[in-house]
Length: 262
Image 1 (cartoon, helix red, strand yellow):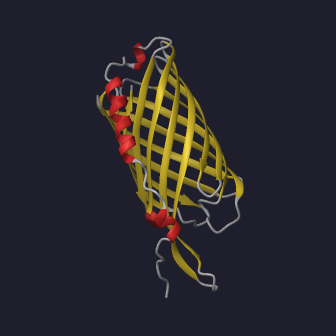
Image 2 (cartoon, rainbow, N blue to C red):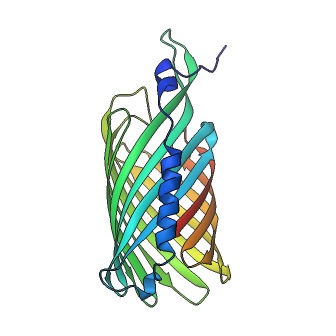
Image 3 (cartoon, rainbow, N blue to C red):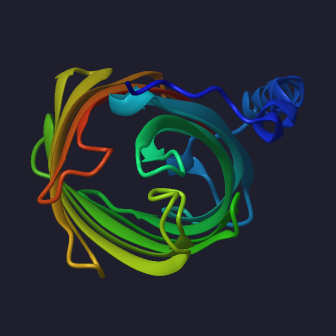
């Protein structure tokens, strides 16, 4: 009979994230951010803070909590460079070997840090960005990330979205009982944003994904983006993820985020 195993003593000894420090930093950034000017009015050399958090949960008890802080540096009236530091704490359940030829359900807990830089250009109808990042984490995890996207404003109430990204990871976080190895993953995202009200938009997306081990997958999402102020965005999404091969992350997910973009 299969049983769920408890956390190892090593996992129990891991320190809890410093939420007090994050809350203090968020409050400090909010104080300074309240005197910042909107991005569309920023001049070259203007520096403004950004911060927020995002949470994910779903199939196989996957949970991710990801706070982040950053800064936006104005390069010109409609161009910016954005530097961000992300911390992600995640965990999930999976079936692993019991060492006797059978399987037991196990817990995995891990941490990933990401430092990213992005160039952002805002036009009257076309907005674009290019982002690059370095990642490091538990279990000798390393990675590099490149992301770019465009948003074309079709009308005052709708826009079209397209983005592509590639990530190269040296990892076994997603397949914990397999050898550590480099894997490349590529994704194309197509979506739209439709404003139901001036401060509320619906955002459906489709994702086509493939990796260097010839695993193909697809996903779709639909979400709401609420922006009661120009510096605040509250997001809520439903995701459905599938793979040609049935891996542990096949299933349904929800996400929620509160982000401040000064």
